[in-house]
Image (cartoon, rainbow, N blue to C red; front, side, top):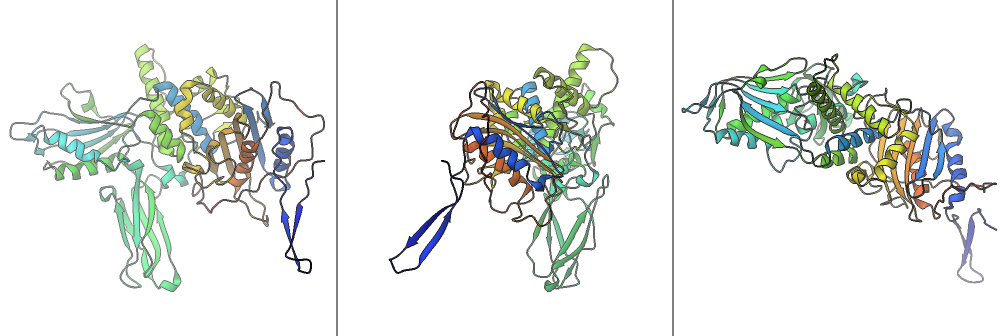
Length: 545
């Protein structure tokens, strides 16, 4: 008879000595036959009474559905929506595709070394420019220009970001996110992941202004500060705020005297202009002076010089392969990368439509990308009733998907050789990316590869698990409208509620068969494992990931 009660060990040093009673937890129930009952018990816990669960688990080896809870209902997926974008981009361009950033001049340099025209820095959608700090992209361009014999540019340095005919924010993004590092502008000309780092230090004495500096310095915003230094015992209260659409950063509050320097990541207001400023500094380092000013151009404005026959190409810098962009985008849930990938797909669709030369009404680059995604999903049998995705990053609360739609995508990518780049890009439990400190030292470590997602009251996890029996599973777990009830003991991170399900899948010691067998009388379930992991930062500060 299988016992579910605690075993008790009694250790005595001698006949007359006192005994130590040690309670030992029963072994985990890892049978496939009890999986449904165990997951039901977890999902039906009273703390989830006001929440909504959607779960689906399918075997890649047998095709059997091992578990389903509201598999066809619609949920906000948060950043697991990135899975759709990543698969679309890889399908559209292939894993080896690269994206250019180019420098042009509107005239040839004269014999005296003066370029009597403008420099035009053009972005074609690479979100990684500046990420690799081993080399300076700006100095690479400056050296290329210097090699033409140019020592002075009479005109302006124009940063052209018009390749995307879309706003720099995605459909459904919230205004409050737009100054944050995870809500940066999606620009055809991006630099340093469209982030500037702000460093705050106390002034020399209480009452003095605090010190504020930025890296890279060329990307520093205009600052209005009343941030002061106060007595150490009073602690720090630092606020940085930039209103949507405003270039000025407001710094206010107080910094405790003697406190260590604190670092903040702030979204760039104008990434293209920041790139131009960095290039101007590099030109000066290479002995090239700029006589004109810096300008940036975004849609709906245009820059006619790009259509000129006299445009001179100075050089190109190429992105890493698309497979690497997707990997970083999924591993650490980089919103800019995935939003730009959707826009790149949209731009290709726009160009393809022009080749057909059939007049059509204006569609933004993002909307064309969404249309392409809908077409791609339809090929997989996923209809708009099962998945409606409005942006590439998963920041939009307009996004809706069913667990079944996510699993259909995962099965497609998990059983196709072409899906190798997609599968490699997923975070590995307990090892890297957004799963670095989750499910560590559990059976899921190294055996669960999945994309995370979180917004306020919205949590998701979708990917692959290899069971203890060696079976490969695709799963999607979505939890919406969840707020942990006050007084929950012990308190648990919401992500741990999803991790417990993934761990249960990794622990399975039995393989499924076709068709999956269902026991007539499900055994009494043991509780799912309690997940205890090191403290981790909120997956997104306000929170999208």
